[in-house]
Length: 404
Image (cartoon, rainbow, N blue to C red; front, side):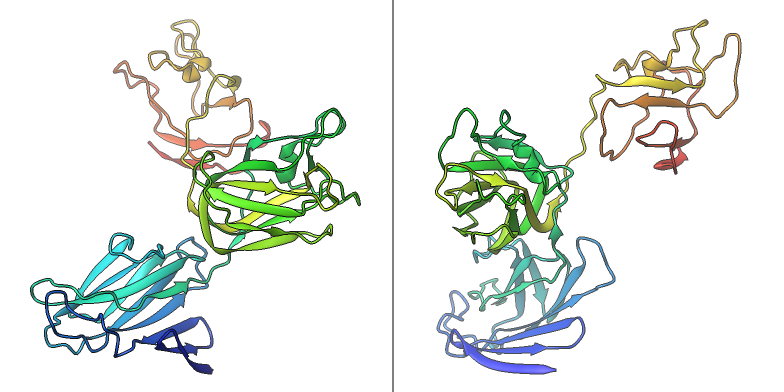
């Protein structure tokens, strides 16, 4: 066990680092702080102390794998009858910016659960009297919940904007900067035009993330053309409004990957790398790979896959004599037409199946089944199994099965 005591910013900070997964932070606030008063009264609060212990359950791999136990030492002021605990992700301290307010009453312990790994939380307390008058905030504690922030998968990334890319003299398309192949590069124009700096690339991450860092891998073919020197990096939820850069500086002149940590977490769905200059003063910019690390905050909202390019691959049975029960009716966009297995001249038994080509490769979230809408229950599916594959001859296990 290591114990360290130091005085910082006018109050005593006692930090105890425990072995294993527990970390405990204790703050003793300065007794002479002039503003610890109940509003509307002349009684000074003696001390409002917070003791915060953070417990990380390493066996849990979910996004929300942390909780904190917060203990408030009661105020000694006789007019204080309870305490409020405030906490949240905003470092701008005010009652409106804290996302959570917990009235502890006479309790002194509160367990804050569902804390997001890798995020910084801010905690503060107030005391109140029987009239609801509330003291000013205690000093604020901040803590970054440990977590294994990893490289954001680029499956759902898409190019929003690039100011220049070479597509005549070489394959220098911007999408090469996030294709996972270090041997392909984004390169600004050089064959028919050589636009000058700044150059920029804007990507949609496909979801909202709390980002910790970005990395830039220069081209790996031994050619320094386009190697970025000065840069600025932006994160936003709006690709038209960027605000201040979350990181800026000068890269070392080498072909090794450069990783830049942000001063604080940056939340957004869009990233923008701006190259301000090139190591040899040329007009070019190039990049082999761009990556960011962090954790997801809001997964993408599933949307209906357009059926314009769908086509029928196989159906085991369809009625085309007694009625229009063709299989293609099951994805024609018209709820009044139906796919129906044969019944006029033959009535084959279950199992029945329909196989559809979506026309492209998708990351699927769900499927929906609309039974016939004419009031007739004939053919309404009871038990089902649903499969997804890139090979219509090899299906593997069902992605979903059950009873409707």
